[in-house]
Length: 415
Image 1 (spheres, rainbow, N blue to C red):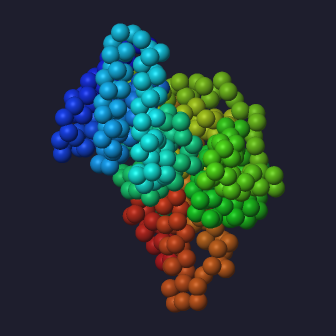
Image 2 (image 1 turned 180 degrees about the vertical axis):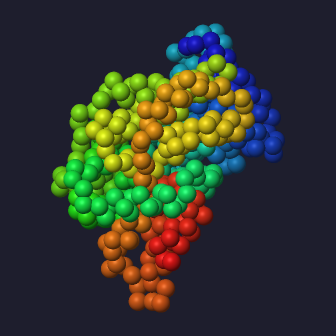
Image 3 (image 1 turned 60 degrees about the horizontal axis):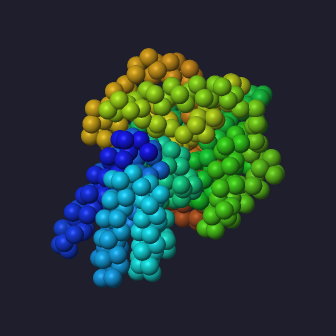
């Protein structure tokens, strides 16, 4: 275990002991604040022991109001034991203490009704959302907490965090280009899809529009093996997302989505190294993007694809306006962020020609092409109601879009 990680763990444990040694009304808020402070260490160091302890602290915070006295005493004893074992370098015993703490918390699980029945899962989702709020990508935030993109995207779609910034490009620019592409009769048109837009569409019950969009597009819809893994294999192991995974698998089997296996690994690695060494805090590089997330971009560059379909805002902002991403990270970490301008410039130059389409633009194109017409209610404002409903469905299922953008898209198509 690295010295800096051990120091951070001991500080978190010490603060937890101080909070819990005497029961006071302020304990709840102090535990919550402590877990938020700890998440910054996770974002910087990406260490599994920090992840485990951060989730643990947040879990204690969630059960604290209803915890039984015996379990409370056991938690205090075991946290002191964990701290002592860590100070003495007894890492095996430290890990056993952490495991015991998770066991104690699980006894209170029946009393916790937050997001999911499993309090540990709920804690991981909450802390992943905190990492996302710091500026990490959905894939990176979910991966650090041992979640799938489906878990995190479902949660954040019901919050306001995905629309808490102004977009770099106007709605007119975003919507004009895909509308034109779908109307052109070009040969060998190609789109690469990241996992996020397909998750957004499937969870919005709009996945069925993809075969119709592809037919009218007249080209190929590609996903990489890493995207397939996130869309099919991982959710098949999570009961609540099994059917969604089968819907995606059906699109693959029917040829709507084609798996592009010839991923330029060297180029993808070079891009991810540039991206994750551009920003740093206290001398430590910030890994804000997951390698799998950039494979679609690398493939699009390699075969000169028309665009990448991507809801993910971190990588999108990095491509479209990386200086704004640096400012965002500074605001979210409330700390000075160092920028490697050479790496930033190299990354920007390589991705300068990449065009990005979000799932909400795909839905808008489907509306424009009449694919959704069977849903228009017999009402004077029927078209407006339909467009409003599908745009908001996409927004609430993980597409990073602002309220103002939705209104502008409606105005664009209903004028």
